[in-house]
Amino acid sequence: MNVDQMRLFLEVVSLGSFQQAAEHNYISQRAVSQQMKKLEDQLGAPLFIREHNHIRLTAAGVYFR
Image (cartoon, rainbow, N blue to C red; front, side):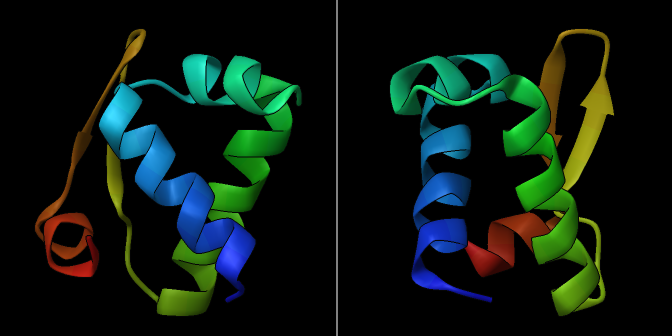
C-alpha cells in the first residue's frame, strides 16, 4: 500500500465514481480500477461493492476510510 493508492481511494469515495476519479487525475478508469484492486488484495478484503455504474463501500471500506 502506498500514499497514492490511499489518496486515490479517498478520491473515489468522495466522488463516488472510478471514472470521475480517473478524469480528475488524468488517468484511465482502468488504471483506477487496477489500483483499487491492488489495494483490496493488499488489505485482504473488498472495499467496494461494484454495481452498474455505481459503487458502494463495504464494511471494510467504511472502516478503512
